[in-house]
View 1: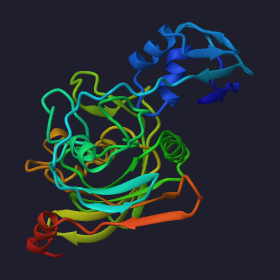
View 2 (view 1 turned 30 degrees about the horizontal axis):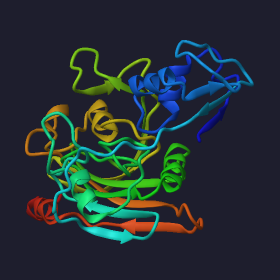
View 3 (view 1 turned 90 degrees about the horizontal axis):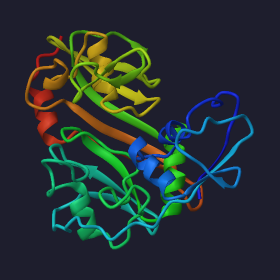
Length: 295
């Protein structure tokens, strides 16, 4: 049962907005459903969505058990890098959607997981069982999936407080030297609601990058996420004038973005040992680099 002690920093926030920012995978609308069902208490009393929080308040959330999923299990091959009783680490292929959504009701990672794994955490609901974090459809690489709610809560907490490390490789337009940090708030684009953008009032976002190699018109970067906003790397790179190659949504051309989740590390939820995983570039991206001209 998630519990939060309200500090001066969070005082004055609406309860629903506060929880939407703290409960991994929960939208404001889903938080409001929890509130309407009496599953959220402030100082041991049921509370309304509009309640303004005060310093010292204690917020308790009772997460309902997952309803039976209507998502079909599908025998889709998965590259399972690691698996035990609490979690599994997947090397997701480029082009695979993580969870069912409008226009993608089948063929997703969740459909495959339901076939390969008997038990998954229900914290993120029936459409995202076990999903702790996600990758965009055209981003390949590593992600961790929780098999039980205790593991899910631990991993989500590590994601939030940055004990989970995620490393990426990206080919970007133009030449970037050395290393640097992009720290700019990310939120919904003010005009195109299907895109994200650097906007005033967006959520804090931090991306660190380091140049690995230079090609004619491009730079290969290693990147680390300090936060996990939607499309964060793609938005930040476009913001500094170096969009990810192939990223049509953010000005990088066509063909699907050259972005790969190459490294993942976290503390095991059961015993605390540090788990470190690496995934080389998939063949289709390695071929792109092999054909490029060094400079």
